[in-house]
Amino acid sequence: MIIYNEEKEDIVDERHICYYTVSEGRTIILMEIVEVKLKHPAVKPFAYAHKYDSKYIDRFDRAELGAAATVLLEAAQNNERIILNDGKSL
Image (cartoon, rainbow, N blue to C red; front, top):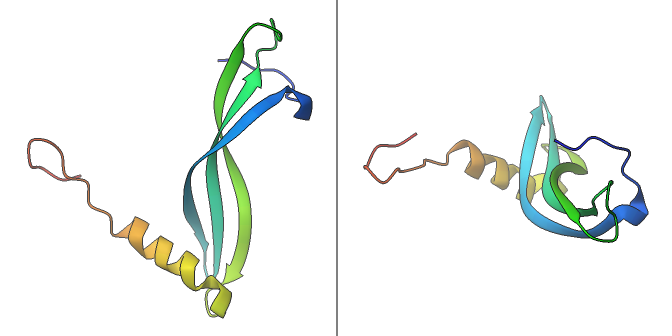
């Protein structure tokens, strides 16, 4: 585990992984997981460190029209069933 003060100039690349939602009563929050490629703190010119960050995207009231896609994402993530190779589900 690398712990250091990350600076904007240390970020080489950010790659989108997925979106997810967080529910707070009548409010729904859209979040994003990104993989961040950083210059390694000990040897910045030679190596990179990778980490995953959670980023805030937007906050909606569930009843507003702009929340429709986020509410559908929440429904999909809450109803997803994972089927394992042996046929059992999680």
